[in-house]
Length: 256
Image (cartoon, rainbow, N blue to C red; front, side, top):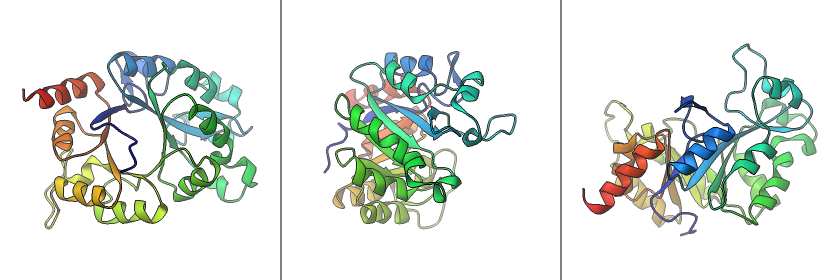
């Protein structure tokens, strides 16, 4: 095993959770601080590039008004309330792990290699890895390969799209050389997903992943589902309810 996590760790999704949680907007300084205060071991951030090659923290490709983040300058993003990567990193409390979800854009396929999202990110990864635990996850396998080459000390997680079953996710992570696989909770049959004939038990898939040398992250279970996943051996969960999950995992460990 790669030893990225001490099972089962809690990763705050976009900070304290997606949307607005307790008055804190996702991917904001306040949200990151709230996640840490609530007991998150890690904070997940979403990184995108701008028209002037800055990196900002925003999940969606477009703003609510339809403008693409990649078409905006860093200053225009700031006017829209989007913070930069530098500001977000400076706000992360010491001792909190950093889970970087790299959001590639289609322009990365044609722009100069130095302008690609992952290329702009690599110096930050190398720096942050010297002072905290860092993990990079992405839907884009090219990002994971680039990180393995350009920041070899930073572990990566193959994160196939939502509802992608372990049948594809686990072998894919192995083929990419990732030490971690990230599987949507819905792919495990959680989150209100209807039963699917032939779906393996969570513990079966997690055990196979572990036998393949992978650690397993799952996103986004509710607190009760997070406790179930922990019982099945999942190494970390990316959650929208940090305090609820911390409490549920604590109760499960104590047998309560």
